[in-house]
Image 1 (cartoon, helix red, strand yellow):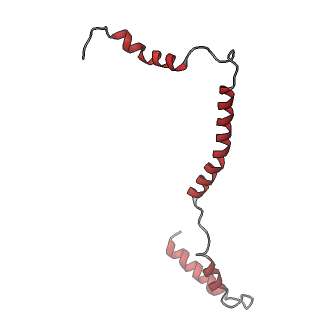
Image 2 (cartoon, helix red, strand yellow):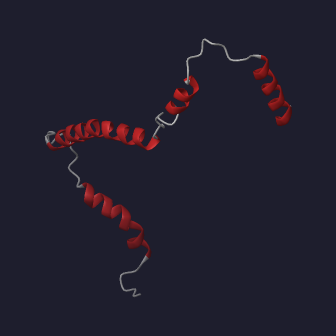
Image 3 (cartoon, one colour):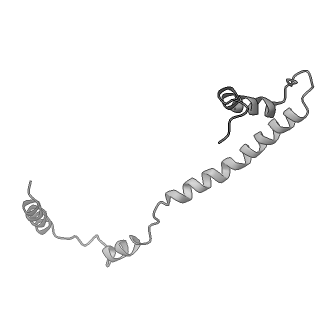
Amino acid sequence: MKLDQLHQKLIAAARANPPSDRVPLAFEKRIMARLPARHVLDEWALWSRALWRAAAPCVAIMLLLSAWTFFAPNGAVPSNDLSQDFENTLLAAVDQDQPADSAW
C-alpha cells in the first residue's frame, strides 16, 4: 500500500469518528509533554554497572587462589622453577640453531 493512500484512509477514519466528550481537556498536550521526559536506555551504564558488580567476586577468587598457592604444602608444589622452565622453552630454538661463535 502506498503511503499517500494509507494517509488518506487514516484521515478519513479520523474524520468519521469525531472526538467524544469523555476525553479530558488538553489530554493530548499532557501526553506529548511526557514523551520527552522518558529516559533513554543507556547501554554503557548497564555494562559499567555489570562490570563493577563482577569486580568484587573476581578479586575474592584471585585472593583465594593466591593464598592457596602461597600456603600450599611443599609436596603439592613441583620443585622445578617455572621461570627457568619458561625461559628454557623460549630460548631452546635460539640455542639450537646458532653456533656459539656466530656474530650478527
